[in-house]
Length: 173
Image 1: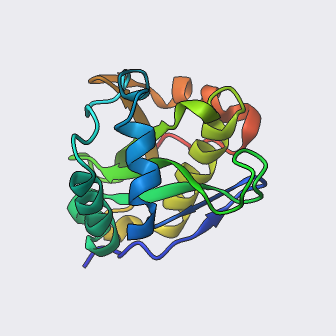
Image 2 (image 1 turned 45 degrees about the vertical axis):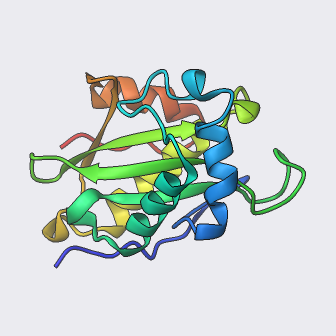
């Protein structure tokens, strides 16, 4: 059976880990609040309408296995440098399997107050490298990752170049 997400990934400024129910108010306010249209503009999802949808997603992230819907991590400010307080959830990143064995895609969003600091590049590099290295290909793991924006796939080279400055890129297979 595919892996359950128990992974915690740390970078210089961030922690990626399974979200907790206590993250729901912060995450909902960032993706479902006043900046919703801007935060979800490039996503294939329009964000939650009510906080219960955020809670439902968090519960799914805590219990589903990689092969079911992928891995979902809260992006947390590890040091407090972005939020003023360590451990605050500032966005989400997901790595999901595709219908092509050994390949997957990544979805992500970051609260608008945290844009322009290189935080998402750091999270993307860590999340992609983490899922590629920690999930075995025999468990529907990924050997290559693709970013998707409103249905338009970016190939591995384009995506990798976007994160290259802040960390490892994911090799194409």
